[in-house]
Length: 328
Image 1: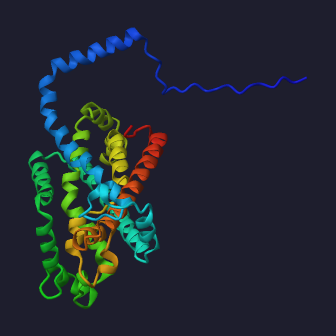
Image 2: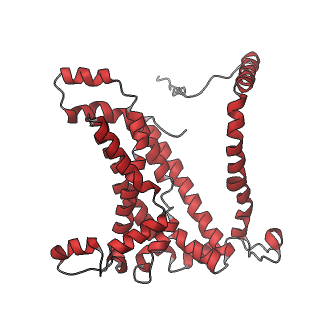
């Protein structure tokens, strides 16, 4: 007669043991001691906490107008509740899926092309032996970050002008004609992504260069003695050292998949490329500030942020299972 065996429960390794009252009291006393010792640092942190509370948490009070028919005369509390009306209106709108598609398209290509470039740039800069040339290259690649969006869009418009744009002039012998890139919707994604890479690649490489500075030179010396080439040293020493940083930044980037830089997209828009350039952020701006449809635009923005939050949770969980590195 076979005896049915009860399945053994696996103990979670990540589960922390419960603290005794004495341990809790000791931990509390230690925390108080640290706060008393480092009170000056906490004082410096206070303005940042106040700033985040005022500009990030207090505005959450207004989220409720996404479920109301907001009337400025009645105020937020006095406006009548309409439930999910604005969400239903958005999803039944023929523009909804076009807006989502355009937003995802820009974000996807920004990650696919724009995310690896700073990593490659950091690895290349870290491999340079000439310190002067290294600093010069870093300065040149950092400079575009400090150009304002308005100036950058003005430069793009001038460079891609069909009359006098030097990029159009350079491409004319290969394309056979002078193309108005800003007026063709199919080029919008490429213009946005490539200009974004040019502006942010150098600045984005700083965090990877900082991570690479923690790699011991002895590892490279040992690898050189073993006959490892520069490429192998990058692949087997440098790259593994920055993998946790790469994963965390990728998780954060995926968490804003439904968010595209609103100012730049809005400034690059025109009537000819609107079919591809209209994204959720620009659409909510036009509805809310230009047409005063506050409840409708808030509902769309809330949907956008909820999707971002869900994606962040899922990607973070996947990254934790795959590599062990995550935000929490």
